[in-house]
Length: 291
Image 1 (cartoon, rainbow, N blue to C red):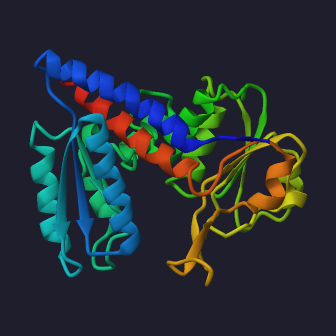
Image 2 (image 1 turned 30 degrees about the horizontal axis):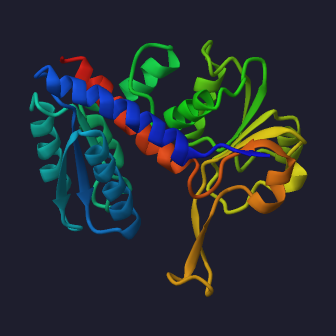
């Protein structure tokens, strides 16, 4: 069993970006600028945004964090997005989800200029990805592809089973793995909560991407010997032995599944760091279109 260590791969990507940004600065060219918008003070969202701001500092990007209170109306948020769309200094805009119930996720995502949609959620971004055209790919699926590439994982001709069909992870992941690219060229099966024979399908998989949002859903009896397992899930599970009162678990029962795998991602430290690295890559590419 080998670990697909997202921390190591992400650090390598950020190191390369840091060199590229230093070169831009030396040449007097524009430095990438990422703007993050946080509505309310959800603990998990605060953590995620702080990690993104820290990553910007590490690679030399300019970053701006804009905060709105929990009661903020949709109108003001949309106005701010439009202002950022029109600002030539801003290369990437991300609005941390989930949003409070009075604000429509869909309206906010659609309001972001596709040329600054570094989260890759805009319908135009998704449509271009499906067609295999240059675009910003959703950060988590893109991060997984970068992780596979970093470790030179052979995917051509493999059977990949994606467990989960969300627009943020499952669906784009299935498209990317099936594309005529490297990594890619997989035969892909998408499973979800209504799939009747998930166990049998997973047992056929050379690659499993678990993104169903259920703690330890993928168990050892669902994984064949030598499989590659990518665990996208992250759930806080109560644990009185921990100082903070909880531990993090993925969608895969790691302790029993890992011995059967050729490669597997840990949780935490697998897909999470790669999502942020992919976001940095998207922001850099957005900036390079203007330099």
